[in-house]
Image 1: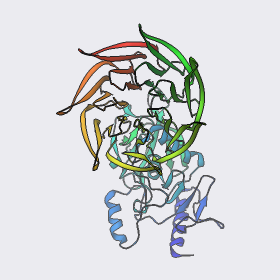
Image 2: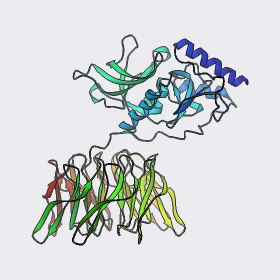
Image 3: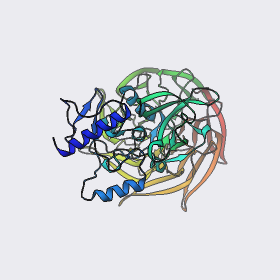
Image 4: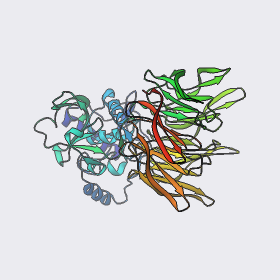
Length: 542
């Protein structure tokens, strides 16, 4: 047995014995991890012991970690091979799901061991647990996770009443008092007790009721919020125009895919098209208005279509979409992009013999990423797992990419492109409406267009990309517009959109649909004398 393995085994035995916890050292027939270190395996992952660079890797400060790295000299402190994650956006449900995976696996506590599983590789103490749940970067340099002393570098102090699931209660003290626990909601109306998730030295990964802010005798705890956490998308209220503005699709209060339609005497409807949409499903009309795409209640990408004088469907077209997946189609309605259950950007496509797919296009999308196709469906734009605006593109030899085009998008950002795919709008990390644009020498940007968007605001371009519509921070439907002197705006066009409202415009950009604060499908419209509205189209959105 090597000295390295002896040291690791000895440390694991000592830690487990001191904590009265489960031994995490190597067993007689233990497997080894990629570093050749003996491990303890489970059905969903395995634990390995290691030698920390500091005496207390749970509560070490940033300066202590830096000093330890200097003292290590030539000793390798490298990024992990099995976890290349960075501090990317996660949703609150992602945080709780990741944390519960350790609770359900009964992961024992140890500041001298890390666990490798589908979440990555993280130290199995309280701060390693939060690092894992928040999907922070881990490597040998930080002892496989942040510490109670460094977690404030990734978060912001909040008030007690601002706490939401996925936030933390933190005691950043050094030594034995340093500890952190994940908040998962209040257990009483007085807000004196909460549902907490933690790696506790006495019991390991556990979910239990905890008096606010923590059990007595453990120091001072304060609430913090991860700077890159995203609220889960509320039940969405999507709307979608066809290119001419003759139909607008939405999901009614019973979850049915429905539409309103324009006649010579005004708007008519609503009427059902076919099928039910998942709570977070977009609804997307093809520009021709004869197809509508959505995600059904089983997560399948599906469509309805108009034939023989009536709407048909629903029918599955191929592939399953993950929770929160966007959905887009091209000008012909023959290609549909979505995010699959593994987070990959994927597509289905129509041929003379029917729908084909799914097949991957390239790259992985952030959990809240929208998707945007150009009219020819030879470019698809998305937000990658690092928050960068990226694209895949089609060549004669197939799909290529992903490649970054410029700019970072905040959590919850909308995304839009024009018919040519030469301009892409998004919301930057400061909440500003911004864009990248293509030139003969490549992608340029980002640059601001004008105004700030609400945290859940979609973005929509007209076909020429000379008008961009969004929902401002007060809930007003607004736009920016291009002139010979550059982008102007923002200016309000009429109406207020409720939380979760979709937003859609026509090719000409002269109609804008949204869901108003009472849940009605509504629109603003442009005339020679300016913007008019809002007016109700018909039907109530879920």
